[in-house]
Image 1 (cartoon, rainbow, N blue to C red):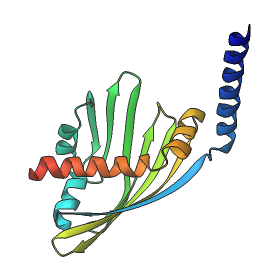
Image 2 (cartoon, one colour):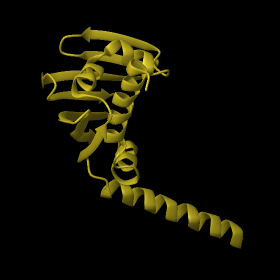
Image 3 (cartoon, rainbow, N blue to C red):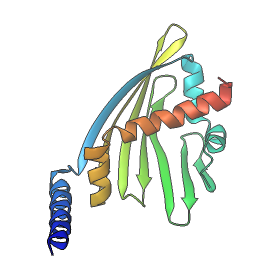
Length: 168
């Protein structure tokens, strides 16, 4: 009797907590993350546009379709129902580029601005952006529980290409 009541009470509290989080999680968020990378600005720019090395640096991609290589645009698949489409909207070589990342699985759209500035033999990379989540649970996770995930993942992708391309 008391054990069942205790379990039901805990389940009730968890449900109330989850419902509360869905109301607290914003639909749109912004981010900004800055890092110094130990590569010159030309290397960083080239890596950010090297789709072949990018594809090879990501082991979980099962299919990769390049739609445009001059103004990088592609779709990467992780399985039958999981893909991300990336569309570069505009750029200035060795300076900045803007692109949109769309994920159907997470019902997510991310607008990313990548800004480059040289500093000696390194490059200061600043990722800024705005995320929009339609999926309530993804919104709770990515905006409340792990708010820097989008920016950190964009850096992870760039750094993976740099390491694979330049072997360091």
